[in-house]
Each structure stands twice: as C-alpha cells, then as structure tokens.
Image 1 (cartoon, rainbow, N blue to C red):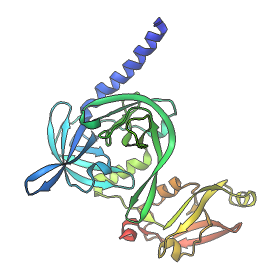
Image 2 (tube, helix red, strand yellow):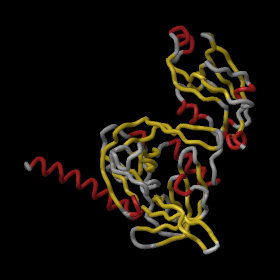
Image 3 (tube, rainbow, N blue to C red):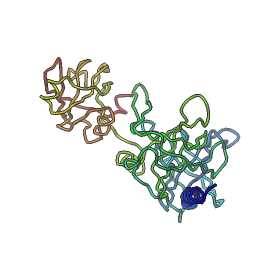
Image 4 (cartoon, rainbow, N blue to C red):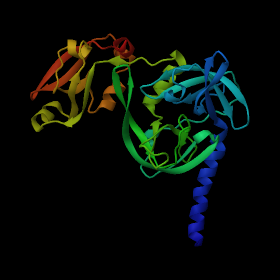
Length: 323
C-alpha cells in the first residue's frame, strides 16, 4: 500500500471512529415489552437515539408498534424502562420517554444537505449485537416507500438509500454524516435478503423535525386529508404556459365520501396548487397538508381537460377519515 493510500485510509478511519466515539453513548438498544400473565416478556427489538438530555428517544414506529413499554440499554450499561409517548406509522417515527437525566443527546442534522456518494455511518443493534457500527455512502437520494394506516396509504418521501450494512435490529438507530450529526433514522432493508447493500433511512429534515416535535408535544401527528392518490406528471405545453409550472399531480384515484370527492375532483385532473402554493409531486402535497388545513376552506388549482379550474375543498383530519 502506498503512502497516499495509507493516508486516505487513515482519514476514512478517523472519520468513522470519530463519529462512532461521539454517537455510541447516545444510541440505545430497544427491547419491546408485552404484558402477559407471567409478567412482561420481550416482543421485539431495535434501536433508538437519545435526542434530549432528559430522556426523549427517537426510534422507528414499526419497532415499538402498539406496545406502550420498552426497555432501553445504553452503551455505558445503564438500563431504563421507557414509555411510548407517540408513534406515527406514516413517517415510521416514534418517541420514547425514559425517566433519565444527563443523557448524551445526539445532534440532529439536515438530510436535505446530503449528496450522493457522501460518507455515512450507521449505528444500532443489528441482530441483537448492541453498539454495532457500519459505514458506507449515500447510494441514492429521493427514494420513497409506502406506509399505511387503515385504508390510507402514504409515501415516505426523500428516503436515504445507503450501502452501509443494515440488518434487523438496526431499525430506529442513527444514520450519521461525517460530522456526527444524525441525518436519518434507519428503517428498512430493501429486498428479500439481509444486508445486501440496500438500506433505507427516514431523513431528518424540516418536515420530520415538525413530526418529531408534534410527537414529543402531543403524542401524535395531525394531518389534513383530501382523499386522492396520484403521481407527478409533466404538463402539456399549453397548460404549462398557462399555469407557470412544468409539473403537477395527476389524480389516479378519488376516495369515496372524501373531501376531494365532495369537492368534485375527478380522476385525470392534475393538481397544481394548494392555496397558491405549488405541489408538483406527492411529497410536496403531503408536506403542505398539515393540521393548519384541517376544516379550513382550501383553494385548489387544477388542470381539467387542458383548462385551468379552481376548486374549494374542506380537508378533514386524517385519523377521523380513516376511522
């Protein structure tokens, strides 16, 4: 190995070891507990990230499921019982609260600043091996995968794809950048095989920070619901010129008895704007449908058969529509 190669390897190792050293104390192994006649027994496992010094942990919603109690084990050997404060299956994020103090809270970063090829480090408890570290790169950005609650399906957008080795048990653990900032919460290994270089992480960005804040404050996330399914598509030249944008969301399904159905929205309509804010893909639509729109008259701009039309819709709360 040449001196230049050795220096490059040393630099890579220095970044990974520095990230591991700074974040390992903030990562907990999660044991999900279920009550039975014989007492509490294990019902699942995963990882979690301490995000405040006074006991709030961030993990994956699918790790905790519907179970209210968990046991957290830190790398220094401390063990805490923790309660599930809130879980949001549509973002696959959940908050746990332990009766703990003086925790080494992990700094949260911004996944929107990531670039393909950038070094990332995954830390968690794969296959029950606590405090495991793997490193790789951001393989791709802008991925999405489907989640659901009741009859409503939603895409988690801008998911991070990484080749850092992920296995069952990594879910809920940290994906960090080279500065040791948590930019994602590991959520899935794609495909039928384990650890085949295709891991996914929910990004930490402005949207998920709002979700985390709502879970910590209220234990749930309130979302407005229109009742449409669709996908991004380019506009025909005449419609694009009239609308002043190149893409919109083509409606492929309108849910019966939904706010969209009551407003007269049709399949093949193309949604352009909500309250004059552009929505060119489902990620933008989902980001704008916050609790502020629940029950409030909302103006939509659509393309229907080549013509621009305006429609007023009254979104309802997502949970109410599912129930």
